[in-house]
Length: 453
Image (cartoon, rainbow, N blue to C red; front, side):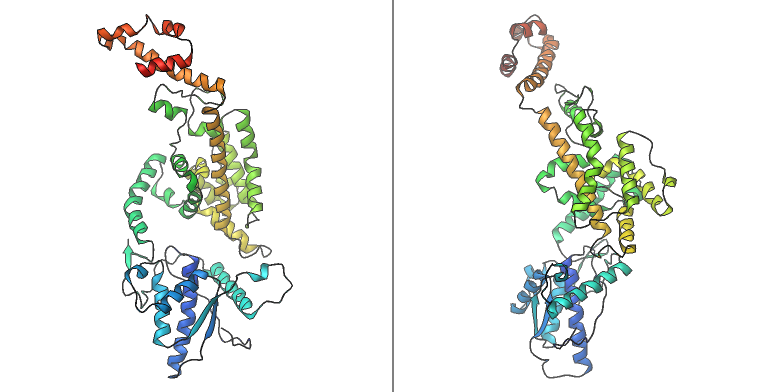
């Protein structure tokens, strides 16, 4: 808080409370702090006259500006508005405005103006926004942790709690998750042979954000993360007339692991480019720096999994990184293509960034692992789509071969069960399947016969 002349009156930093923290809720708590400070001054000085009109308050969150404008124009809260995310904070701010006759003019200001290449002097509002961001960053560095439990704010009166954790928005989603996630987690422990501790070590925030970036491929990605992609093995199990083999190589059994380990030259080249492409993705992102030790562990862990070599030995790495190696070994290195990383990746990246004064404070461990996780899943998706182009090729010769294999398998099955047919229907069959194929050598005629069977 500063005067119009630029003199500093007060500054502070502190936590925002809530399990699913958003920039909106964090900014709202900052504004709530300012309002409480002004109200305390009014109460302490027994001021009865209105405070000076139009006290300017600036925030870089446009949604907060819009929300407060709605509160100001509303005569009373409605059920729909009270169900909006983080309504408890914004409603408490509005309550304080009205109770103490605060006439605050809240407006939006662009953030991080000091990072723009311009020679123009910054306005006082821009400078104050930069100072506030620095204080917030300093608090995060010193006291970073989730704070799901907070005070019940006066305007809220009541709050929904699930497993004793307060819920402040997206109520239908949170109720649905509370019902569906526990059995899903149980299924994952059974399917992947995880203990409760191993499952708890997974960075589920990174997982959710990674999966959320692939909404256009939702069905494909969801099958992939549970090892249910329709590979040759799975397709053959569902329909034994379909080939179980790999469409790229001569392997007779294609499962989810084989898609990544296929000896085909194109896949081998994709594997060679995996790690260099990860480094490029990091360098192109806003989080352009990396801890060399984390890159080394990631490279060696991925390569060992490709080569089906023994798991990484934690004792081969510095003591601070051994827990990471141990946790990821238990989770499974194949899960890095499915967004499942240990919490230690983000924690160690965060420690590296904070211990290096040359790295901007905007670089966080969470953003770093998010870049890595997103790139690996996108890389798998590219490989899967190229595999599908071969399996469902528009190349006429290859397509004819796949169709012929399938239709002949179905016809052979019919001939093998000919004596289970009604005797009056057997006349439509030839002496054998081989004779059938001789008389009808073309795949189109065989498909037509099968369609009329």
